Amino acid sequence: MQGAAGLLCETAEGPPRPWQRQPCGRCPGCTLLRSGSHPDLRLLLPAALAGELGQRAAGSGGEAPPDGRAASRGTVGREIAIDQVRELIDWAQATSHRGGLKVALVHPLDAMAAPAANALLKVLEEPPAGLCLLAGSHRLDRVLPTLRSRCLLQPWGRPDAARALDELRRRGTEQPEAVAAWCRNAVFDSDPARGLQWTRRLVEQMAAGQAPQGDGVAPAVAVESLQKLSFDLLRCRAGLPALYLQGLDDSLRRLGGQGDAGAWQQWWRRLAQAAATADFPLHAGLAVQAWIVEWTHLCTSRAK
Image (tube, rainbow, N blue to C red; front, side):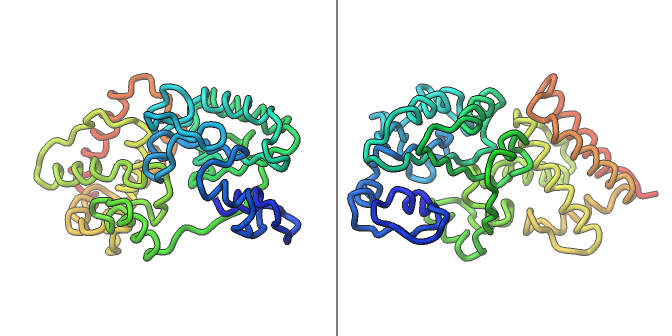
């Protein structure tokens, strides 16, 4: 929001790049932004993330529907829907209310299915005059190359451990230390704890000699979680502490000690290949269960 504040401030001056300007905090533009009612600001967020960040459904000018849903009608979950992008396009074509820039914030840019991303691409290819679009993502590799190529990339560091924990505690997150480790302090992700409990349950079931189950988790979440789990297994196998699943080192060391190192490395490569198509499995449940079966086999096989 800091970049948007500088763009919408009506007295700010400074760096040649407008989004680096510091807002004055006193002008009408700053006052409207602070009250959440600036007509030239549009937030494009998944419905779930909007709730987590305390941003009520931003329609045009930050006006929220009375039921607190996202800007697009019926949008539910953690994706930015195509209806939201279409509303953004209509809003962007209109004249600025304050006579200055119009600013759209899109986060996370990777939280779009292909139809929504392609619709946004049309705005980037032919942006209306006076529109500044600021987009953010923790997973740049998952943003369509056509979108990336039309953006000016600016890297931002992740929060440090203290700030990440403060943010998770502010939200009332259960086990904030575990979540911070799992997401590597990327707490402003749309769901920093995504897959954590599912993965911990897999480890606990295997450690107890039970057959782990997929439990209906989405393939994209499953493959991302299995990558983190396998990385920690390989670390513990080498005598290093776990990065993502802190506190499970003993169980991970026992499970990772099975099989030979070459088999684990081949499994790691197969997961990387699966991640490229995890959003489009032929059968979601079967895909996840197949990965779990293969992981179980590695955890129970003898080292050669």
